[in-house]
Image (tube, rainbow, N blue to C red; front, side, top):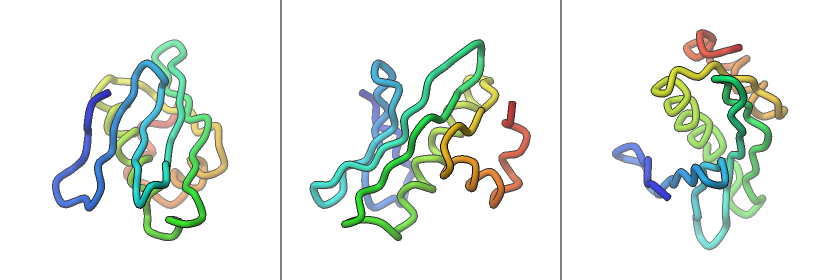
Length: 99
């Protein structure tokens, strides 16, 4: 598992490529973004932030880090979960990644 935390973030985000997951443990709670790779496409299948740590922008940060990974690896992205779909609607700067 590799840490991919941007400077200035108050928690560490880890990438677990074997499990196809970006995750952060905050106050004992696990927030995550799951994906799969299919034909040079990153399909974001699930994002989850426990209620105890919700409302802090954690899902957005996990998504940004996942999209940076997709861009670095020249993957197009398929937002297959509701949160990822909404993220793309709100952030035009990532539209170039859409499959």
